[in-house]
Image (cartoon, rainbow, N blue to C red; front, top):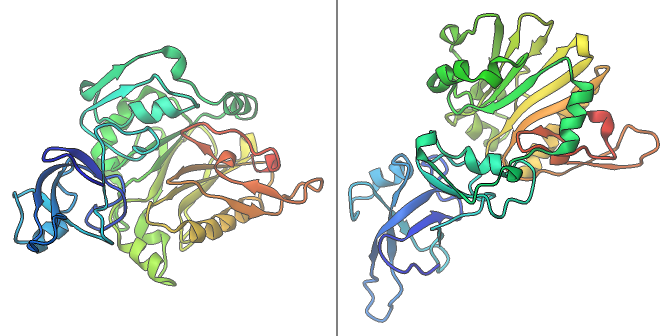
Length: 348
């Protein structure tokens, strides 16, 4: 990608250094372009970027002495091109999972359920949000999901939140009326350690259990070992002590997951989170094990998830009148609001 010059906004379009935060979608500003030392070559040798998040590129900066500025990260040529793209503006799809201090959001071209929520929830505070072309009709959830949960889970309120550090946002959770009115508060990216008792994170009249990232993976593959030692991640759940709820934290399913059983609504549900570095094909195989496990229990089944990327699974449908069904994100109750898979309604 050719940049027009210094102070251009851009983002990294491929994973360079996952541990250092140099991943697809990291935003920053070009502050310098280094020229090639070869007089016959006018192609730049490196681009210096100051990322919006100061922690992005920190590992690489510690290894690079020749930098344009203290906070600039050197992006070098890869396969005759730079893994950067101009980004004065970005689609809602591209910014999923991103957290920023300030954003201008246009709702003009919102075309699907949950898209406005994804766009508006990127900023850390209301003071950093500017909305253009506001129209109330752009903010909506999928009608099939709304109707389904009204009919089948009318006596049980479940909330899902990507909390990105429960310790840092514990007071925000307490102040959130929608969350506190739920019977089950499901959390992804709790960022808790394996040895933490989390006594300071208890909420009156709720039972809390969590499954930290370090306990979710074994060392059977190099990827699982890498995920096990990555910071962040993990899932957790608060369940009201007014209802009977059995929360189970499985170990070494090689998924950041827990599942729970609520007898009074005859429900078995799994909560899971997929890191961006988890390869899709491996994730699909592990997800099948979760589906097989919850299908052992009677009654309704749902999967509550925070899945980065689209994941498809081929599986035999247990409905005798269907030979095969596609189980994908449409089968999962997600924050985006998706519809049921018509072949696999037995899962919901």
